[in-house]
Length: 247
Ligand code: PTJ
Image 1 (cartoon, rainbow, N blue to C red):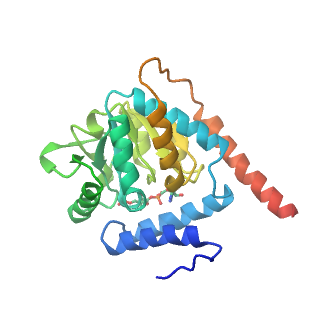
Image 2 (cartoon, protein in one colour; image 1 turned 30 degrees about the vertical axis):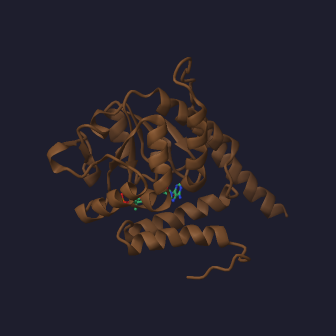
Image 3 (cartoon, rainbow, N blue to C red; image 1 turned 90 degrees about the vertical axis):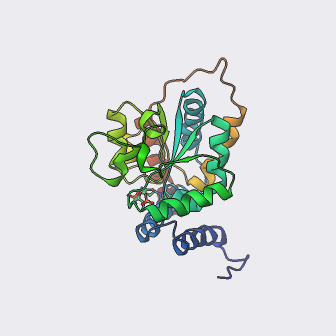
């Protein structure tokens, strides 16, 4: 589809196209297109830019990933379609494993996602070999099936665009959970240790840049108050709406 450069929403329409292409090539599920639409709404409300509170969360996330002993980046259909290069880059920089973990699980889609990540330079991708699968306790969705060398034994897990049931189970299982979620009200956003209320498209690039600059030696994880940070994200939305309503 030709999107004119002059179109006022060109950037957003190009991101949509990534999702549609991802759907057509078997990476993304129909439900993923709806999830993207929900994300777009919240992105409008934050002004489609990375806010101060998002930057604060990205800083905390970068530190947690760099300091982690065995960090894992969990990849679903939407995340793969939007940021394949960034996933592989971030994994290299923070020395994280990459694991494909789907809510609407299918081996065909897992393979398609793994192929895309390999094309973008990933060497090892977990989550595809049923022989190394383990189950996260107290979780009923397909996402409970994880890799013994990946999410199962990780200390820090990045779970962007999460559907909401897994974060609590991961936390009860002793993991530190970082998420990207444009909806500060979602269960995942509310339950994670660090929620980055930003579009993964923007936020992943910043997370990579900040992680690159951090050195493990002398690095300390400062306290991060996720609830307070989420409240600030909601205030950004409220103030943006207030400004528009008074314009
Ligand atoms: O590939 P699968 O099978 O694992 O399925 C993936 C989806 C996304 C379909 C599944 O996890 C799902 O249904 O997710 P939800 O419950 O719709 O939640 C996704 C969350 O991500 C919502 O709160 C959206 O607001 C948010 N979101 C959507 N797009 C973005 C986003 N957050 C950050 N950046 C985005 N681009």
